[in-house]
Image (cartoon, rainbow, N blue to C red; front, side):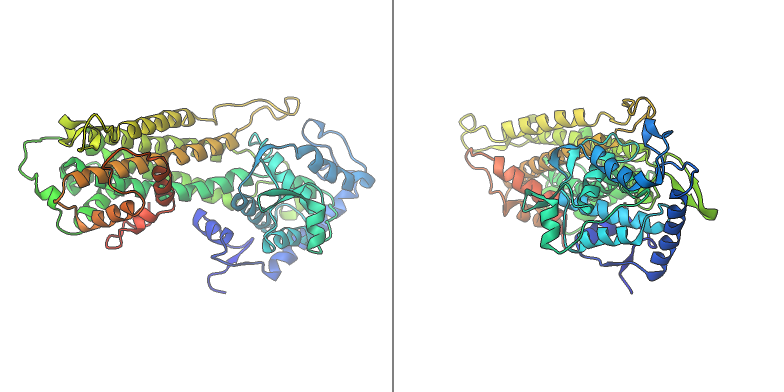
Length: 513
């Protein structure tokens, strides 16, 4: 079927995963895929009855991996594994991420390296179909041996324990399953371990964060163009020849987007200072393509890493041809953690250079605009003075969250698991950083539109006029001081959702990075 994602067969990317999670793209499981995993499951059952030790099938876990488990205790072993590992704390993980974790877990199982039963996969898919979201605490994973704590909380609900998240509340899992007529599943050899092993929290979170970054980078180009007009800056720095001479892919794309915006039609503001005496703009304007373009390059690299991870076998042990069981370390989250740390640095710089442009707009001798962008009753009104403070605070906070989490490691499991990725902390830092960034860009957009108002009756080009109109639908021109708090956050939400870029209907900034 065209447009249907085939779990276990097709390859997820961050975009397709987002579409499946949001219900915009259906998924299916082919019969041949079920037959393949059913055959592998038979082999796992056979091994479980033998005396040969296979990790996770008939042994203890981690430091206790040398302990042999009798066939009569194997089912108890799997249940105990989930119970002991489901010790996460903190706020629940967002439903979209939990749903993505279940989707990618089923996808991994259907790839055929885990040896779980068809019934277990069907149970997971039933939860997705009914929109049942396990209550999954956000903190507790160190990003190696997989995301053990969050995945174990999901696993508990399959056996009728733990809880689901319904209407923002924690509801007993058994009650929810009874409501839907679902019987808890009885786990067999290896299945508890397979449920909890894997990088699914890190990988799914990273995929969804990639899509946020994509929108914010594009929005930053629109916001920077608004500022460039309000600042009455020079387009010379975005000349195509300058960027071809350096041949950096992202830089060339960002510069091209700025040119597209200013080529959308007449720009009275730009035309008004064609023959002014200004030679060069400050770096925050002149070097924007170099900085935002570098973020584009970073995103492209990280997207490649994460897209591979979404289609990886990160269980342990893994099954291969001739029914070989191999114990490895694909659950280690280092690739994701390092990619997210790199992306956090790139996105922090988008905010950093944005704050510099905000300040430039508020300084009369640099912008040629009234101090703090307020013309009426200067001194009595403070204008954008404190809005700039807020941006500075958010930028400073982002510098803290751009420090790499992946360089940290705390040995676990009696030093058996002596190096961990801390990838979930990389996730949490980037989440916080992007929440700040959307508000930094919001403040810059408000300041730039205020600057454009102060240049009236001159008008910007049609593309920027559309962006300006969208901003003004949320926040009116600042005549007298008022609290901008709610307006900053509301515009920030619109920026994060891509609405500022969407407002440029006559300009296509492109979807490729």
